Length: 70
Image (cartoon, rainbow, N blue to C red; front, top):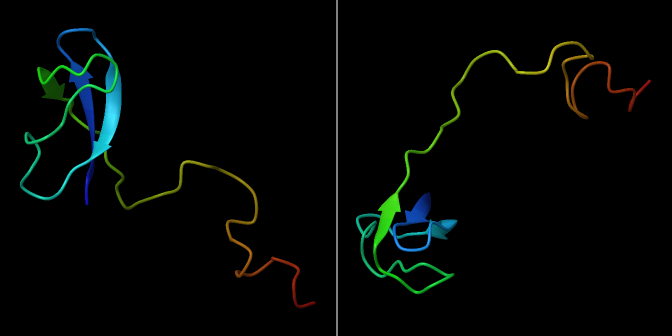
């Protein structure tokens, strides 16, 4: 199930909701005021590519340089 972010047009609350595929606008109400006047926000997404962190050994606990099997 995708996780969507919504904002309430009545009270201005922002919240996240797990919504079944194809049901983005059905059954979602504001947890603060109960309003059904909500708007789905544009979400950011992850992309493949270089890591945001620079430096370090570049590996996790299983990669080279982890020091587990020396």
